[in-house]
Image (cartoon, rainbow, N blue to C red):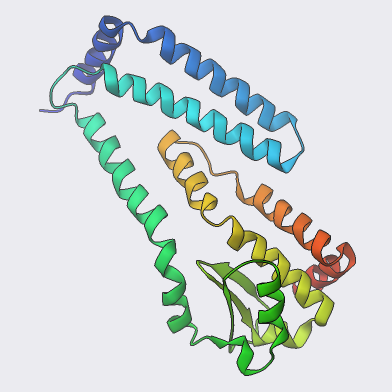
Length: 225
């Protein structure tokens, strides 16, 4: 029969016997230091790096605890390992194919059916992704897997420079979309909130400003917000 008290006592005994308490303590201190840097810095790359480092130190502490466990039938350990395995499969593998589901769901069509330059623009930015459009009056653009999706609503709303800024923003996400699931998985494994979204959006905006212009990006955002 599962007993929280027995599990806690087993944790304490095993950690003390393994002599890993200093390692766990140092990992936690380093994690707190990284989170402090995260909250104090304003640079997107530094914020992402420091928060990810903090999560890794938490995971290191958890790994040390798991390694120290000598007790049999540790239900909490089994639950955690199952949780990590299942979430890893879902988060890291699903995005590789999910964009194909979105193509069918939105009945999306290649953008080249109505105009050629958006796909050429994306190709020039060194990405092998395809641009699709779908029938919706809601102005929306998003990226998934190896595709960029644009609604007819956004195509009718923005001009050429604004659409280029939107495409450049989404191209940045596609370039680094392999890192996004990893950041989400780190958050799940370390029991921390995923704080990567704002920084990723900022970095994508910075790329769009560099490729097109800040004015075009701000104008596009004003129209679709």
